[in-house]
Length: 452
Image (cartoon, rainbow, N blue to C red):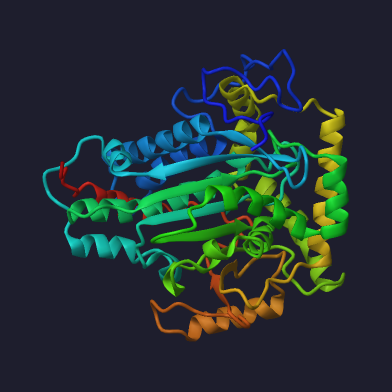
């Protein structure tokens, strides 16, 4: 990593040589008051909505479970802020993006439990909890598991490492049982690392004229090369390891492009069960190249959904997330020393240029490579990629399928696609609020015995 970009931890100084650094940092405004325990938008909104979920009719009110979820969110935010850093590329000089990491260890599980019960988690219980995750991706348990999470499209300063936090929370919760289950069986748990990756256009990132040229000349491949440069240096590439690249919306096609630039050792692993895998959620712009109906659907669908989430859907998380965004960036700046871009500054304008170019890349179409083993989860109601005809066919297949079976839709080559049929009010931006799954996981975690 270039020495002008250093990993910064809270209360250890500031990034005075960051490209956008200034001697004076913004301070948290008096009106921007957030929870004393949680500051991140997804952390605050998730805590509030999980607590509300546990009070809904038909759900058993479990204050202890709510407290455990609160501890999990506090751990995620604390670790993500502590590990927040800026990566500067050597392939694209001075192009940078924010990133952070989470780890899951026995100490993590113990902290979330608060007080560990004296009843061990039986192997059957552990297997039950693990089975609720996507089997193609999470069933095998190597010694080391690494997830790289790619952020969706967003207007600056959005698109930073914490923009993908909702995915990280869900992934964190779903991976907890793999460590907890091993603890309950008296086995060594796998080493689990989750990378949250921002974009050059987001807070902490840096866009250069060279990056703007790269977007023109290389398209989405420029993103793939940039992130592969980071991951090839960060990811373990030998031994009993498995890597999963998970992207959402724009992040899905970026994940696919990144995979193609990973080292052979990471892509192939020891064998097929350890090969790097792609999990793409609601990929945007993965249609065939060329402008047409698919491009128009992206534009119209995006506008329709944002309007719905902001003005029509009273339970949408989007408004709450937007409400806490500015105060959180002020807090993050205080903790890390990474300055925010001034509105309409030279760097801010470059980021807006890059965002416009990225949008046009998606509208032009970025097909997923059918020679790469890929799992796609696409909302049946996604207005950015699902036509009325496709929706009707999906719903027909779901109606005709046996209860409890996974419905497959589409797929080509090594690509497998599964529709997600849920509340039509959440279409493209289906927030990762799997409260029922998390509640089940937390209830099982309380049965772990402290084996030390």
